[in-house]
Image 1: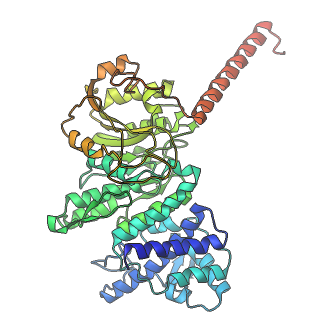
Image 2: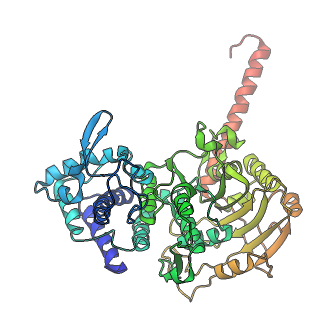
Length: 528
């Protein structure tokens, strides 16, 4: 089955869900994910049996589609959970789908699927996929149509990269949700940032605003490619027009392989539906033993992960929204979410570690107390190596907000100089209907070429002393630094302006309340 055939398979599954009025993208993508993964679980179990891998009470296969070199843990068997035995044999794909009673098949799926989150033989990512799961397929007839669509397909036999890319295409449907702007990052942009940050084998990588796992996948593939022999490197087509190089990681030692699959990648995400997508991506790409944790990275109570530091941080935090309950360890009480994520990165980055983070342009010109405080800390504690401004339309169709990304290293010493680069095109039309092709300007190759030596070019790339940035009130916009002619003022988005107005209004009300209390105290009667 080629790539186009697999895409058609996914489209047919989507159509089955739509016709049953399961039209919310997050919902139908999740339901399809459950079915795909259940089928692959049986294929994996069958493959390991054929390879002669003996059963064991161990932790289960480390990588979907790859026979374990040691022993395997049976999945479709009776397992004792919370004192009771659960018969997961009924969930084996061939057994489940052979039930002639559609309603009973659906009831079996609804009853047993959530319990997979407690199955000791599954990897952490697989268990995360089924945590708090619910089957919302409306009736047995719809489920029958879906499983019949998958009849005869050997998903595990397809190339893992192909399956991963197709799942990314499926996840594209989430873009019709407004909240998708918080997690859907263009994959060609992700690859550019990862190449500039350059994570290495043996380093830990964290995305604390993990979304569907785009940065994690790119970091994992980057490390594989860097540790592959030339004969095991190939170019594959990508959804964004340009070919992508991928490697098998044949030069990795067994201990390095183990660390890459279980100790390198860390994904944190607060949305229970979105973290399922990250878990599915981890399984498909081979790092499903990695920590994939549902948690709030910036607000609420502290947890054990707030005390952990990482070698590399790669992320795209939410573009909008404010919080007033920031974690104490951030050293900022409240502010825009993306500002709090920058504070979290400064806290969670290990000395000598590097970060690449996408932001709305508000991080450049923002002058609130929290903006200034975190930018002061950034330039005082880290080497702010690069500020890359991106063209408007980079995040279409999710948001029109102008964006940028920062790259910095935690040196413990003040920044001396920062390299600025103005990306004017990414090889696409930069419209809601994103079209890619050679007819569209693409500055990314030039960006990557100039990056190692921080080369300058009139109107494109500059080196700016940190002192100039500080004297400019920590305003990092190109126009305010005199690098380009100001064309128009960068304004915050309407929701950001309204949130700011609401915050200031609350401050005024608080001051009025304090003044009223003072007046009452002076009157000495405590009454109005």
